[in-house]
Length: 316
Image 1 (cartoon, rainbow, N blue to C red):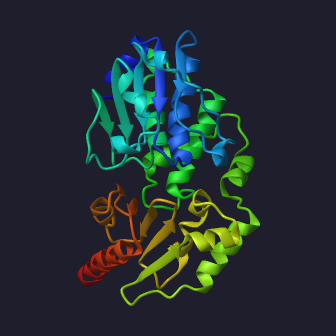
Image 2 (cartoon, rainbow, N blue to C red; image 1 turned 180 degrees about the horizontal axis):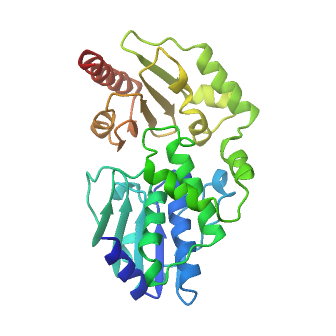
């Protein structure tokens, strides 16, 4: 599959790369990292990165203004996006050919060519492997692309702490850090948070009461967001805060927005993406997202999560 993708990249002179809405470092890292890889390898090609910018990720890259006519006879590549609904900029179907590169479970296949590897730590890791496979075809990595791919890997592995970080991951990282970019500065920009966000995180921990099933439930409504002057997007910065707490096995964040309640599911063992899929979402076995319409539906999701958690405990 990598060989076929390399073949198509070499074939097209116009390439547009997408990723998912509500991006994280791996979304930006794989999307823009791939773009920089192609531009550096083939300077005569026109490569654009599409989608709405997330200001919190401007330190990684800035995106392009893509016009409708740019899609004409273009190769479109979508990175790090499991299902079509979550692709940022729905014009992705307007190109001549569509490629999907992703590491999430392939519940909703799409595209003319699909490369899905659920064993990869991140889509950025996959893009690095695409570079390795394409060296003989002229693929070359530069400092800018290496920085982006490294950031994507770091983000999706929790700084190499998650089980998804494998030998492949460390091999990729070991080569990426040979390029010239400031890792200390990158870490600071990825993980420093404003005081107001830290205060909200502290409030959630103060109020935390884990259930007997090992579940922790965090509910952030509009009133709390306004009280701390924090946006829904900024709460993503502390979604992993329960991971170091001994008594907690799984946890769920509910964040109320104007028209929907966003759900973030995390786990130390129980598989939670089936629960996410039931509630208009999906993702990895131990890190998923979903959405519900009411707090009553949120409570039902918690019950489903409790069932999964208890079944896991009984089996172990």
